[in-house]
View (cartoon, rainbow, N blue to C red):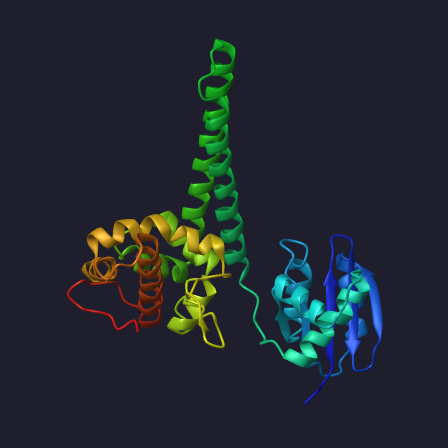
Length: 316
């Protein structure tokens, strides 16, 4: 088994690589030609893992080429990588330093290997993100133009609002078409939409933001969404368990569906009512219901079946 670990710092223009324990380095352009040069540099020698930070779109071409070459990929959370650098006492931050830090992180912490999402899931995530941005634009524009006294400004505001609405409709149509073109995604969306509170757009968001749904355990999916309580204790001091971290877009996508679900799903309603009767704040009870709904979705996808209220699901 090889112990060679390669850290790659990804930027818009360059890829900086650092191999350990050899200590060799390489900088190439973040282009198709540069990635080909990087692959030749890696060569045919066995590699334990290649560690990098996903950087929105700048890492995608690199990730696809490395995966196609059969190399072991270990993407790491940028915040965790930065905390690791701070733990090492690294104050300076350059592309070359970051590449070495990622290689050291790979050697010391051995992050798990992952397979990149298929291209259609990447496209789905892009479409969901674009719709989310347009919805935010619609809200911001409404707040900005509310109460205009001039007819010209009201007319322009209506035109701008119509343009945003049309763009949202086009993106929603593209999301529906993408899911319909993939039988596996279609089946998953159907199962998710069988749950009370989850409609087509929420199902698409869950599939885009959590492609791991149905493939991991309940505690893992809860932690992935940042819905798993984290205990805080020190000596005799006992703090409150709180949620933190996780994928915020996934967590936010569950908020409104859960409000609907606690009115239409007896299990979730019973959980919410029991927590409120025990004196728990409404927000805490709602978070618990969100966690249960996500775990339920994960269970149904793993078992490849739709939700039925008459057949309880073991989610613990």
